[in-house]
Length: 158
Image 1 (cartoon, rainbow, N blue to C red):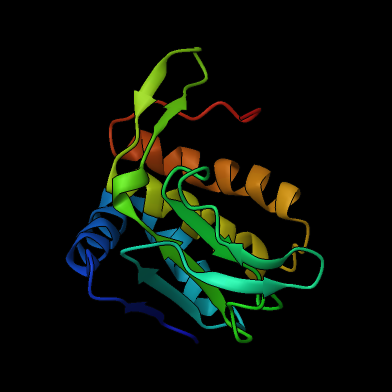
Image 2 (image 1 turned 135 degrees about the vertical axis):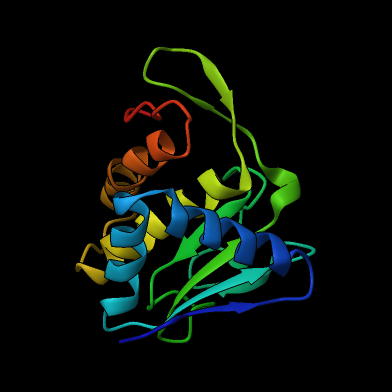
């Protein structure tokens, strides 16, 4: 069983607090955390002051698009930044709104962002290698936790 490891010097207390809230949110939060930890890959959540750069085989020097991703990005174990682990990069300052199922815009919180990224981790642990499909599954896995935290579910088309 691979525990979730938290790294970084910028905002790690926010990650710990968010995970504790997810764990205490109800059965869906506990289930998501258990499934991520039960997978074969180590999950590392790293808070960063600025988006990391890496060498892309097609694009050369590339910056991980944290701002465009709403503050979080999950890298598959095969990604150049992942080193064989599932690696989540978080920059809370880039959190954005999300579109709820009722069409309204809702403010993203640290708990919701972490729940969504953990949904990506679960999808990868289950063998999903398509980023698009993993994103759809992340929303599916995180939505029950959004409800447990008293928030509106995210629209699955975004």
